[in-house]
Length: 360
Ligand SMILES: [Fe+2]
Image (tube, rainbow, N blue to C red; front, side, top):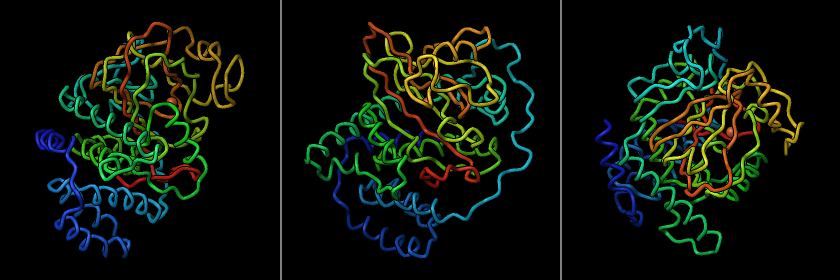
């Protein structure tokens, strides 16, 4: 399965085609399904065809169908008896627990890491060649975003950057502006990268592991899933728990994928390597925002444990949820950019009303 993904990405980067007759045929078959709200069938069929065709128009339609499918999905009840009772798989870990390789990522290790230590680091989740192709995709998406803003959108730029229409929920629109000011784009605004990232998630079985832990088939958030190229001179971000604006009781897993070496010569992440039971005090002790956390509050939350600032290699990942206290680690003298892809998975039953979802 991995080989298929690798081969697929190899064909994708740099390839630009006008919508082909074949792609139009696929749309002619899939659009009537979507019109009848049979989105899952339309998505499955068009996705399978797009692995062969790699068509920009199909990829834009797929992004929209995933959005429309999430809106059309009936409300579901939260899984009872959650969170699951998992014995600590890492009883000796003093900092963030670590495993190596996708094969080691099980629902028990994922849930045990998050519920007992706040996070789980997975070393070597991606191979270097896949990382390099994803990095090239981020470069293409950011440059297409720039060209589009200058009024120079073309078929090629629309392959890499074509804003998904938001339904007017303010947080996502604000988040997009905030992201783009910070050298990031929403993954959902890059139809080709959204296709590639979802193919990766499925080929690796990451959706199944997260779904098993959450007790529900997860959806993605549009506004919390981003492609990033953080410049070396970034100033340290404010400490925060994403639950301060997503809701403390929301059921989530964030996959933060590092695509470049970071943490020493490029900005990494500072983290409080403990499970926190709730949202800590915000807006005080020098915090810049009403949702962010002052440094001394973060140190107190660590309860004597040192703040962790791991060094990540290309292809390493860290999984955490909305209670994890962390910040972008910036300091003077850093030399290199950090490439990363952040993807937030949500249990649909607790998806925040102010956010927009994508069906996986
Ligand atoms: Fe965050």
